[in-house]
Length: 80
Image (cartoon, rainbow, N blue to C red; front, top):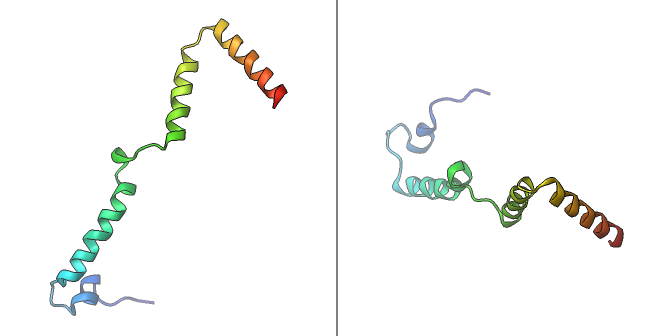
């Protein structure tokens, strides 16, 4: 299937100008999509923030502290 003309032709019948209502719709659609497009503005959900905080603390543990944490986790798993 071949397309004839550009998308502009579809909406403007080759008048080379888009209707204001269509421009507004396009701008609103872009605003709704922008949070998903801009990775710098992407915010982590609360669970991911908690996971990262826990991993950061675990990375700072001494071997002795890490052994204690492992023992506590094993006890927790036995109870659960």
